[in-house]
Length: 317
Image (cartoon, rainbow, N blue to C red; front, side, top):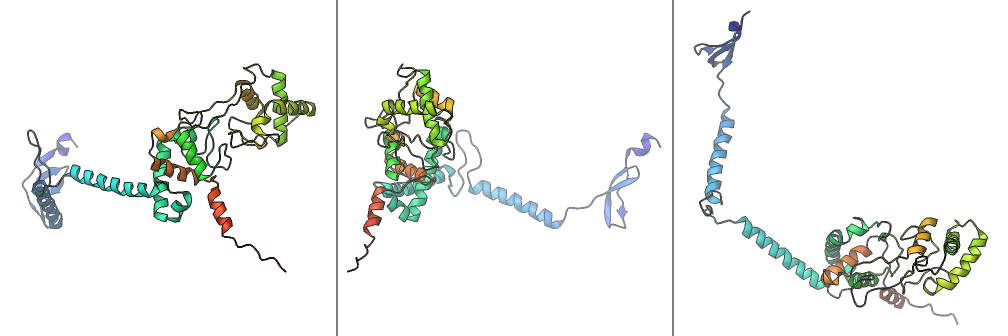
């Protein structure tokens, strides 16, 4: 077989009886190509799409001009439609935001529609402003509190959380939450051995102390230097923002080296005051969202109201 045998050889069109179709007149290695027409339904759809494209180009903005564009006979504008939708969305948000103004947690949670709005708005604000430090799910990191648990330094009620968001911690707000964890080592208030004794004393609360004598010395040093903030029982004081030192939850780490570092250099973490960046309604929504993450505590007002609704038992005569 030569190359010429495989060449595309032109032939006259002929009628192919088995298929009922004419050939195209081309033959390759003895194989002829049928000139089968496209199905009528396919051609019909094709022509319909052409007509639709022409109609769409006439009705809608489509054809670019020198300094403008053909706006279409119906005058539709995507920009105007988007602007209208944005205006409607802002109006709807404004109505919900007005309902959030001065609302407490009980009022918000009692209204399912308002609660859904607060959660959605709070989740968005959290992602934009808080997730960088606290994590996308509020799980926290070393030095940044976990907002999912029930361990709160400054209080975990809705009111406490909202106030912390407004004034911040060691921030620029005139009423910011403020406390001081002294750098006992750097400031020369305690030497390294004394700090080791205090660390062993604190570790003993969770069964990790190793030296009873060091714990005794650490107890005395703790009483001299730490009880004014953390209390004689070392369980902390929320009014001062002093954490509980008897549990296994440590913001900056609860291992021996972590505690020694805290005693050496002190801790002065900062949380911004958000009232200058976020409006009051967004702060309220953010407080609702954080409270709902899992560690939120009931409001004192709600507890007192619940207690008032309880009818006391009538004493037996």
